[in-house]
Amino acid sequence: MSLPRLGIAGVHGHGRSHVDAALALQRAGAVELVAVADPRGGGDVPDGTTVFADAEAMLAGIPLDVAVLSTPIPTHADLTLRALDAGAHVLLEKPPVVSGEEHRRVVQGAMDAGRGVQVGFQSLGSDGIDAARDLVASGAIGDLVHIGAVGQWSRSEEYWRRAPWAGHRVRAGRLVADGAATNPLAHALATALAIAGAAALDDVVAVDLDMYRANDIATDDTSSMLLTLASGTVVAAGLAVTAARRHEPYVLLRGTRGHALYWYTLDVLSLHPSGAHLPRTWVFPRAGLLADLVDYARTGSPLRVPLDATGAFTRVLESIVAAPAPASIGAAHIEVRRGGDESFRVVRGVEEWTERVAWEARTFAQLGAPWAAPAG
Image (cartoon, rainbow, N blue to C red; front, top):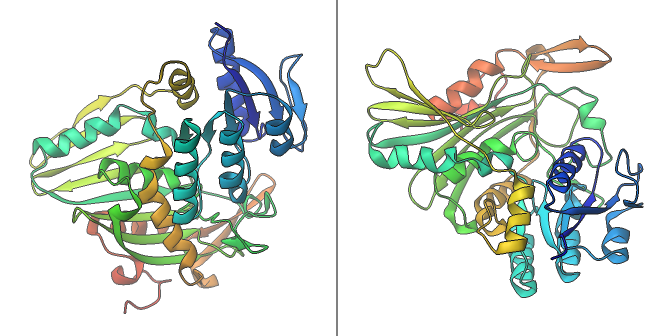
């Protein structure tokens, strides 16, 4: 049996991780990396790999069984449909699509083509997701009060100039959605929604946004939101890339008799029952999403992160894009720091406020954060 033929569009930056994963699978005899595409060149790939200038040329120029699309956000839907039409299964980077209409169109395209679309939410490849759901269902923390998500990262001013579409919600008439909540910290939202069991577009029934920007961008870098799910569960997210340094992000499961924390980049779940002096902690294995897609292509085994399970995330993203532009944070609340050749705008006290959003299920405005607009 011939090996699945693999092509990767976007091989620099984060895209290099896909090349490394593909080469590991190739050494294991699971795939054959036959093509890469990137306007900056193919980078360090084996001799014999065909290098294309862009994804369109790759999809038109060589037969593929599996295509990895790590391309600019506005291109995702159209390129995925082209890859499906060409007969390839697709690993699509997050955020997968920028609207419910695109989500429905690509899901239907995958069904029509009889191919799979896996979304690059790496955290959802962990066995910890099911374990967190099971822990809530077991009653170990009592009744679930709400779910929280906390992300505190640091991104430089230069980060927001990394590409023409960076820091935009809409550019040249096309939806982009490159904000803190929808791109660098999208995993926090996606993980919280997955643990809550929210998969479909209609699983999110209300989105209360309170979003801000310290950088000179058109989208958010310091955000809070309350999501109401069809199940009645509330997800409260405090997400900022304006912290002084990177903190480990987590999902909070707050109950009536304790709480649990899921550290989604580490695949670690810790249970903190009320009155306990120390938590109970578990570490879970994680499946590589490209390897999982290759298994699906070869055997039909279920995908870990199929596109149709990410509709709830897309509904939130769609609401963010449709909302008024994030408000600017006043200079009095911002400290500019240098790190190497980069400048970072740090919002004073943002770590405390993002934590409070998740733990108290209130937005920055409702909490009275000093930079926030008064709560209505």
